[in-house]
Amino acid sequence: AQSVAQPEDQVNVAEGNPLTVKCTYSVSGNPYLFWYVQYPNRGLQFLLKYITGDNLVKGSYGFEAEFNKSQTSFHLKKPSALVSDSALYFCAVRDRSNYQLIWGAGTKLIIKP
Amino acid sequence: ETGVTQTPRHLVMGMTNKKSLKCEQHLGHNAMYWYKQSAKKPLELMFVYSLEERVENNSVPSRFSPECPNSSHLFLHLHTLQPEDSALYLCASSRSLDRTGDNEQFFGPGTRLTVL
Image (cartoon, rainbow over all chains, first blue to last red; front, side):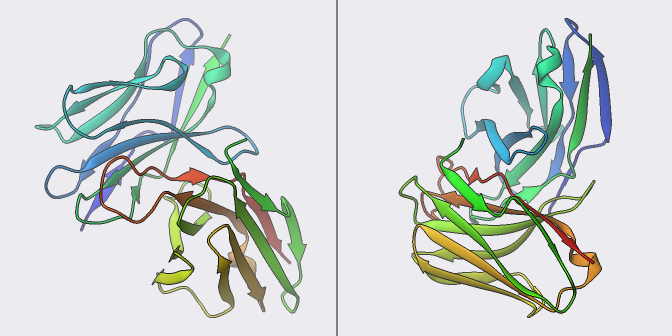
């Protein structure tokens, strides 16, 4: 069965430090990969996506993600965390033959001053 | 904030009530979705509409009844809900249901539903 795993329920990072939010997937072929962020009392906002090409994708708010085909991973990264980055982050994957997204369970990111 | 609005933002209802959730998108999209979001679980896709036609119903109980009168509006009618239906209900839209990568979904802020 197709699935997306976000192995950490919560990630704690000190402000100014680099952050990584992990995502691995089990989807056939070469899927499209997405990251969304959800701030408190808000809907999900699109951050970035991988379709093809360069394995390092840059997105909104200084975030980037690295696609690793051999490890079937799409980890979200940021060189220097801000307190305002504290939110819930979702990884999602879509098979190229389908329109439906397969979602991870989300990772709560807490950035401490 | 994202071109997709949802009302109400919060709803408390009894198990015998009938209520409706409303979603409106101002993005000119042709596809709309209802999701259920529960804590620490992946988003659950409930219904998908494309050009006002329902194309997906992921084994959702009949106490949830969607309606899509046009490509900009989507409703979720609720009747005889159970306490386990308490969750955040998210509406989303996308340009279409095509399989290209350039077709991400845009979400509304959600309706926080509590069933007593």
